[in-house]
Image 1: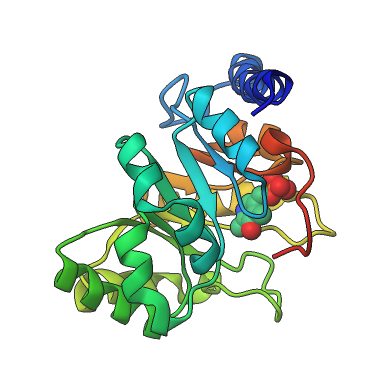
Image 2: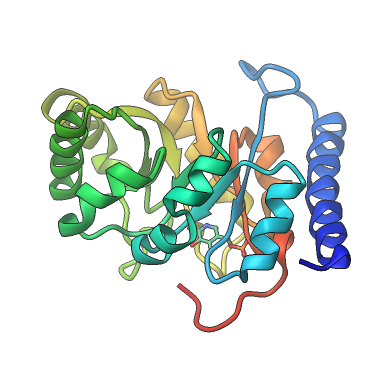
Length: 236
Ligand SMILES: *Cc1c(COP(=O)(O)O)cnc(C)c1O
């Protein structure tokens, strides 16, 4: 690992933390939100090279986000987990039901509970492995056909299903706003939905829009390129 990579990643993380503090200082406190509310910075490590991962770890970063199980298993292998026992791994992408067992074994938080079949199997796996992971429901706030997630109208039923039938520990809501719309509208809407349903955690905001998400109540921001720089290879 080169010193410059280490310094660079550490500076990126510091700068994001500073921006979070700055927007919290600039915006009026929303009702029912502690000031400042705690914001967890999840460093999205998908498709990033080893030396950058090590640099983030050296800088003290412990929350990481991944969207593909196999890639995450390689990156966050037992050796690495043993070196950093306080790591917290967040699954932020779509999950196939046949991979639920391995996902429950690897991850610590699931942000993408997006359908009944998945919720049911996650509940079964968590019971079998005695690992009750905090979960977010992914909401398709833009009602986009190509995007997964629960529609706002179905949220009440789905939440009840997750809790009663699947015994999932649902702590909040997650969204990915449509690329061609102002993200703040979706963040505000997600917050409203969370309030309506008595949920306190909001996973919203990425590299380009976390500064909008924080004043609207984000508790978890998922930042990839802002921490590590551009990803190699395909988007996912
Ligand atoms: C890749 C990804 C991110 C991070 O995106 P950046 O623009 O690199 O910050 C956040 N959330 C999800 C669900 C992702 O797949």
